[in-house]
Length: 205
Image 1 (cartoon, helix red, strand yellow):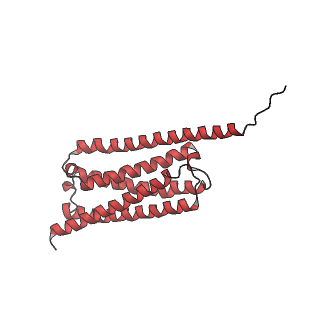
Image 2 (cartoon, rainbow, N blue to C red):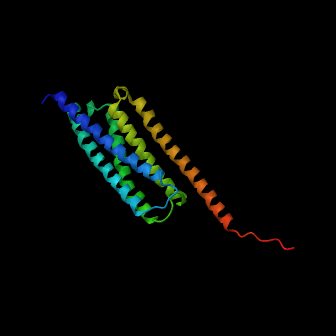
Image 3 (cartoon, helix red, strand yellow):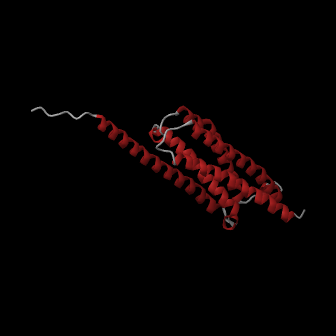
C-alpha cells in the first residue's frame, strides 16, 4: 500500500476517534445541563456511564492511531517532533488523566447524591464537577483543532504556549461563573420556598 494512502487512512481513523470522544463528552455535558433543576436518578447515572465508556473508547483509539501517525511521520525520533506534536501529546495525556478523575471522583460523587437536585448540591461538589467537565471539553476541542488545522501544524512554540493556557483558563472561568450563577439561583429558590411556608398571622382586633 502506498505510504501516503496509509497515512491518510490512519489520520482519518484518528479524526474519527476524536469525533467519538468529543461527541460523547458533549452529550454527557448536555445531560447534566439539561437536568440541573431535576433530581439525580439511576437513569441519569447510567447514561453518563455509557458516555464515559465511549470517551474511553475514543481515547484508546486516539492513542493507538496517534502512535501510528507519530511512527509514520517521525519514526519515533524525538528530534523530528514538532511543537504541535508535543502539544498534542500533552493534551491527550490531560484527557486521559481527566477521564480517570471522572471515573474515580465525579461519578461516585453523583452516585452519593442520588435523589438530590444537581443545582442543590454543595458548592464544592458543583465546582469540582464543572471543572472536570470544562477541562474535558477544552481538551477535546483542542485535540480536534490540532488534528485538523494547517495553521497550527506550522506554528512555533510561542503560539502553543499562549493557546493552551488561555483555552483552559477560559473554559475553567466560564464553568466557574456558571456554577456560581446556578448556586445563587438555588439559594434564592430555597429562601423563597421557606418564605412561602411561613404562616401569615391574622392581626388581632
